[in-house]
Length: 264
Image (cartoon, rainbow, N blue to C red; front, side):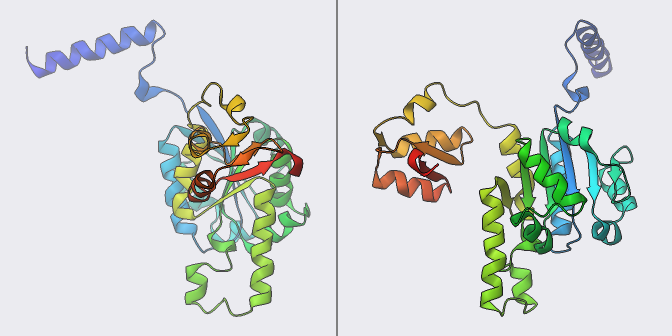
């Protein structure tokens, strides 16, 4: 049987399967939707734009992009559409508030978080479109992932430009990031944005019995590993539980926080 005939038969089988309710995987719609918010930073911008293409390829629809006034000047609507596609809805500071788009989003992305926006979020100042959207996303329980390069006072590019010379100021800027991280914003490097999004949206289901395991009197290393593999960044244990030294080491290695119920 020649190759052309094989291809014809294969195409017809796929067509019949689609007609019977088995869609061709290559034509499946995106299964997750993201609301993407740009502020006006440049550090990490190019890496983040490349990561957004990877996120699109990972079956995530970047349905709506919001540009702050500064981002509109620095990036522009035209470039966003060139990179992410002409069908992307772009909201600017002059557009109507994208409340419906926010509610429908599975995840909220900030490909460029600036120090100014981090400061506003740290002190819950909803005085413009971007912090208002992000704070509302958190109140709605949305996962917010932000590329931290432009907001990181100790960023390598900032050091190379000699922008890390005032210790007291650097400490305040770093504290702002710590605050918003405690609010639930996931801070990552721009080059890790796609991997973080994939981990959030496509993480494995929590193993059966995990919640019960975290109520044990002793928290061991295996339980910590299982929790992290299930996507848990924060492990809540009983007030009087004992934490083994190895469990603490594994938590530090995997960047997981262990919190006792008495601390909540």
